[in-house]
Image (tube, rainbow, N blue to C red; front, side, top):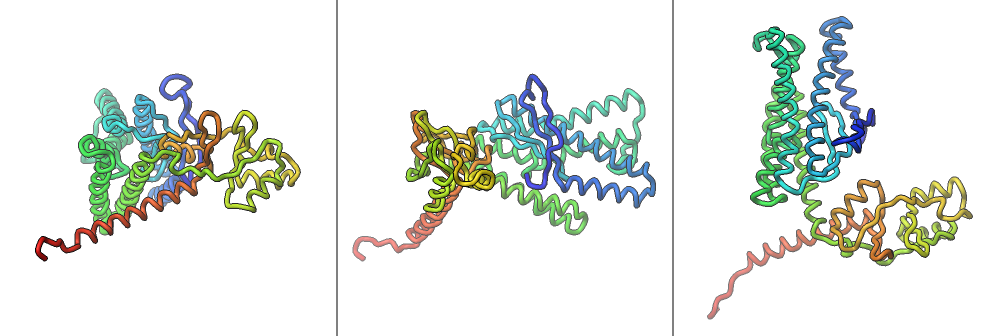
Length: 385
């Protein structure tokens, strides 16, 4: 995610988190903390009020982080890893490597987050009862009252808030899972997105008169729902297409002994920017446009292309779904991926030709829709006319 930075990597060593999860923080989260610190200073005029106020917010976001780890651990139960967790002003975002294909798996993963907050609230409730330090709830708010009771109320609020059926909240993912089990993933997502956008509109309308924060949340939910719909339509468009249908078959390759000058010549003579490097055993590396420029700046034209190539690169098979190839391109930050059959390179798939395929597919869908409308509007001829 843009404007976010890695602050830690949480490694479990063994067990469910053995691969580790990267923890990131978004710029807007830091802006929120700074704004709250200034607000507490203006209100209390003391360092103590600033520390107490910001400390509570950080404790609340620690609960949010545990909420996200609930999703992470549940996803691991179904063999799905998590790329990273990003802290945002409105909560946390755990990015899974892939979405669960089974609706019940998605429901369990989505429900795991609120379940963690419910467990935290139960622990706090038990502790307060044990210590006999309960205060009437009428005296407790998110901004005033005893610290632990405020945290308890905050976690209950997180449970309720996250169960709202509006993307990217967990409630809409649970709703999508229930709908998908009956009407399929794509149609289930479309209905869930529509429900979520209705909630977003209502929240935005209320926020317009009562709370700028609610207006911001409504806007975020609306955008999140639209992005979810686009992502699902993209996966649907790519999942039924094999890689061979989109791959470039007219492409140039480089040999390990070629000079950088040969790569420059091929680049200038055509539109190709990424080149597989081959030898007698097959593809041994990839030279990207940016890698070529970096090598030219450091070595000039006379060095072998091996100084510019990456030896770790993703590959694809011609029969696999284009969706998995596209995901691999994104995960590796690559612009092109060689297609290999029986150890030999038979094609090349780039981000550009995947985008061209999607554009052509969308255009044909519009054309077919218009053709159907024209046919429905044609007069029907009957015998004797």
